Image 1 (cartoon, rainbow, N blue to C red):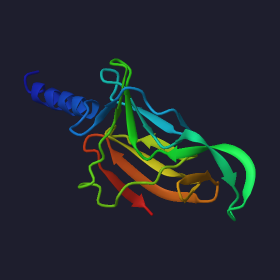
Image 2 (cartoon, rainbow, N blue to C red):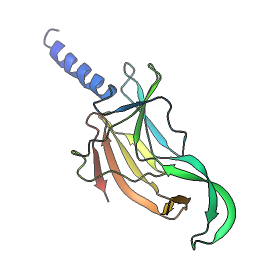
Image 3 (cartoon, one colour):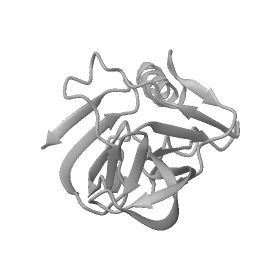
Image 4 (cartoon, rainbow, N blue to C red):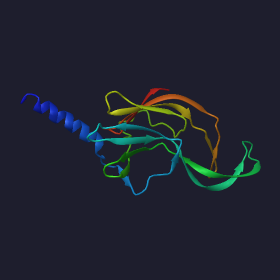
Length: 169
């Protein structure tokens, strides 16, 4: 039994490090009101958390223009696409925006998206994001919602280090 104690301590340390906010993370007073996001649960029963990625947030109203720039008099909401990783702790009832480690993220980070898939890796320390749509077009200060670009990239986010890795371009 004594021989298993150091191994048990290492496992507990690994589980708790994935569950704790790291330096640079921001605790949010309220989370963004996202639509079209995906989520995964991680951390096991003792340190259960939910990671959220993608989706979009309605920002304000504007007059919609078609792809040629002509006003078509439809009023919609301007949107902000989310490419941040948000973590919810159901015990503490807090939302944290994870600080992405751009030093370790050698391939950058994925664009905000909707209609993507997301799954927790078997190791439990990272999740994978596949495809979706980057369906927006920035013109001046307005973001127009267009379902134009279908993505086929695959990214992995390490929950412990905060690093994104591009697996398939």
